[in-house]
Length: 506
Image (cartoon, rainbow, N blue to C red):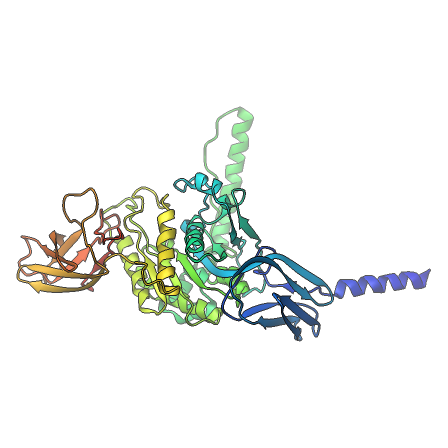
C-alpha cells in the first residue's frame, strides 16, 4: 500500500511539473494570419522539448530553449479564405481551427478607438452591427492589463464578424476592415489593443521612453505621483470610511444620500503606469506578423503637445523595433474638432500639429477628421468616415492603389503678394469651400507683430487661396483652422477636408 501511495505521489508530481505546449496570445481559433511574409509562430513548452508546427502543408520543428521558449518561422503564404487547422505538437497536441490567411492590422489608442460598434454611441452603430455578416473579418480584443515589466502572455479571443459579435468590435476597426475586405477580397484581422483614457506614454517601452525628451519629463511626473501615493492613499481611505459611515447613517435614518464616493488616487497598477500598457498588451503580441498599425489617441495628452511632438515618433519607431519591421505602415487619426469648453482655444490645434509632424517618418499617414468631430462630445459618433479615411490611406500607400485619393488639401507653401498671402496646397484638385457656407473661413494672418486677425479668403486656380485682412498691411504668417473647434473646412474634389496648419513657428 505504501509503495502504491508513493507511486501515485510521484505520478502527480511528474504531471504537475510537466509544461504543456502553449501558443503565444495571437494564436487561437478563428485567427487571421498575415499573407505574403514569413510567419513567426512561437510559445512555450518544457525546456528541450521538441515542438512541431504544421499549417497549410508547411511543417517546421524546433526544440524549446533552456527557458522553455520556442519559435519557428513558416514560409510566406498567399491569401486563403478556406478555413484550415494550425497544429502544434509537443508532449501534447494543440489544434487551432478555422484559421485563414489575409491581412492583419493592429488597432490601438484610447476611447475613440476602443468604442464598440454596438455601444449605442456610434452613429447607426446598432444597425451596422445587425448587418455585419462578414465571416472573413475577425477581431481579437486584447484584455486590458498593466505590468511593470514586459510580459510574454496576454488574454484575448478571435471572434468572427457576425450580427451576434460585431457590436463588440472597435467601430473604427470594423469600418476600416470592411472597406479593405470589400476592396481586396481577402480576410482581414483586427487586433484591438485599446484602452479609454490612455496616455501615449504607457504604450511606449521603458527603454524608448527613457531616451525621449518628452518621456523623461513624463517619467519625472510619474515618479512624483508614486512618491505621493502613500499619503494620498491614506487620505482616500479616511475619506472613504467617512463617506461609508455617512451613507450608513442616512440609510438608518431613512434619508436620501447623494454624496459621491471619493475617487481612489492614481498609483501603482494604474493604466497611466509608464510603459505599463506596452509591457502587458503590446510586448506579448510580438513578433506576430502584421500588415500595419492604426492609432487613434491624443485626447489624454492635450496640453502637453510639446512632448507629443517627440513621443508619437518614438512610439512608431519603438513598435517597429518591437515587431522587427522598420517599414511597418503606421496610420493615425488626427484629432477632430472639439470645443472642450473653449472653441477658440488652441490646445487641440497644437496637439494636431504635433501629430502632423510625425509624418516626417516614412510609411506613415494621417486621417484628417477636422470636419467630423462634435464640438460638445469628445467621442464623436461618426466612426464610419474615420474608418474609411484610414482605409484610403492603407489602400493608396500600403496596397499601391494609385486611383485612391487618400488626402484632402495639405499646406505646401505661402508667398507674399502685396497686402495678401497666396497659400498653395497639395492634393487640392477641385479645391472648394465647405458645403453650406457662403465664403471661405478659418484663415488668420499676422504681421511681424505676431497678432493674428481673421482674414478674408478667396479660392484661385491651381490650388491657391488668396488671404488678406484690412488690418494687416504687411502680412508675414498665416494660420488655418487653428482653433479647438474652428468651423467648416475647405475640400478637394473628393470631399476630403483640408488639414489645419500654420506657416509660423511662433
